[in-house]
Length: 409
Image (cartoon, rainbow, N blue to C red; front, top):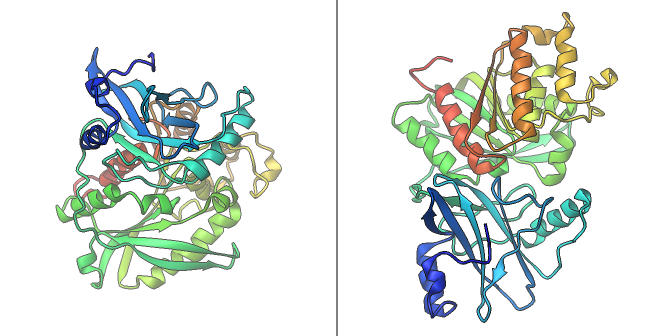
């Protein structure tokens, strides 16, 4: 739609841009929403923080045009300090967006590699918390701050949460120290001997920030609808993620041979009757790849928006097979009747966002491949796209089913 046309009545006020007007905008919160033709017309409002800022850009995950198509630059309202960006969104939309303030002119070239390199640098240095947004920002693997949008209000009240505790994992195999955080959803009974499910979350530094995820898990347990569990968040940096995730034997070995025994030792009073591994994007690929090396280590593997297009097997024992993608590798291994993978008991839960393209198709392809060999696999689409806020909603739904006291999967 025409982004030069401010729709919302507040943008028509005679005092727009005044301190009183900005205070009123703060009460409404970003974005300003009007309904037109059954859709939400959302106007994101921004106040420049300094005169040095020449460009304000926005990326609304799965909704605004891709950075490879165009730069989504906010328009300045002449004679004011107001910048706006207007877009139509589904009435029930929720998800993430980033806002960049920069003095640099976005590159006008069409080369995808140049545009991506510039955008990553901006995300790392200049991504902003939106002060007009009522929901907490979080940090991504690249962007230093990511904001949330919820067309319908969600319960973000700061109810007391069980504290997340930290221990360090000194990995001999990886020659690295990795921060590991953990959450016991039955903290009031944390010192009592009991049975629990063990849930390992890759990209743990993301999940430990998302308080809604923690809160919903705790509430479900308090309501008696799910079994007790210990959720372990395995942190990574941008550098270690690129090194360890994907198809990397050493990380899988370290996870199974070092971290899981360390957790069992640390929580001797808990008897883990099931172990689950969860990952998204490259982490989703990594979780499924672990099943190749350890076919029956995990009871459940949850892979959301997995990067099954992956073609780098230089750190894999399967490198000699010269596969051109993970899907091709899986197909090759499953054709080999001597492979232990054919006897895998792990239940693999595969999902992708309905707004995704290649990853949506690759997820379905992986499910069909596993199912054709009578392996335990499920597949579904979740609302949204390649977005931690959509992963959060889907992961909560999946875990609540797997941990349910009334449903056996």
